[in-house]
Image (tube, rainbow over all chains, first blue to last red; front, side, top):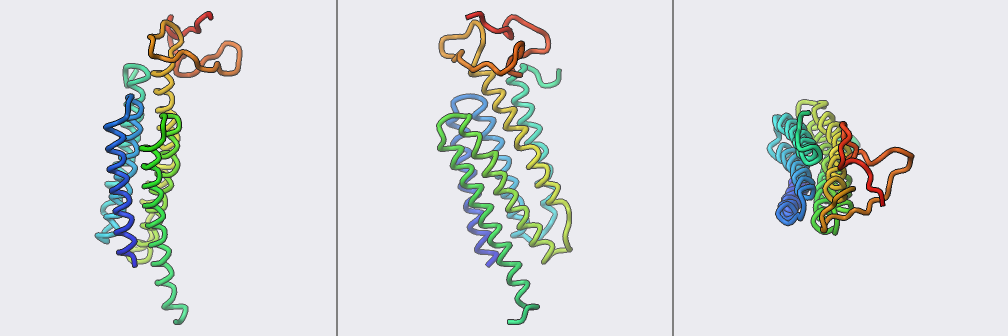
Length: 89
Length: 143
């Protein structure tokens, strides 16, 4: 039962990542692309956690936590650069 | 079936339901990101639906490892907490960058919209236009 659910959810998240890639390539302005990258990071975290359940190890949680932190910091850095033209003032 | 053998089956069913729900929410959020017309509407998909989807998947992972693994741990709760804290902040920053790029106050180029409703209050402006050191571009146009 859990294997079927994992297959369905992995397919959904993979399709979501393809949609994010499409909107990353399409997005007309820079904030659109930043939003698409942020969503890609969130979906990648979901993919890592799903793969951790599939492989039955808990070593992937550190990777997921690191990706969450790096994704948030990079989003804030990109928007800060757009707003101020500089990251650390 | 006795209650002792029924409980693991119920826990597995709940885990599978949460996994499928999380995947569906992540897909719906990304579909909204690709489908909706403008950035201010497009912000809603990732910030709400995708975050909820990841929350569901992480909840399912907590249940799974509390049941099958080495016992319950708080790592997953940390990820959920951090994602739920950081999603509104990053959405706010993206909206500020969008307003900053799209709407200009003075000496706007032809393709940039200048119409933005003024915030309530006497001598205030939107935060993205208020520079720390007052410059000519951050002041309001006299129209």
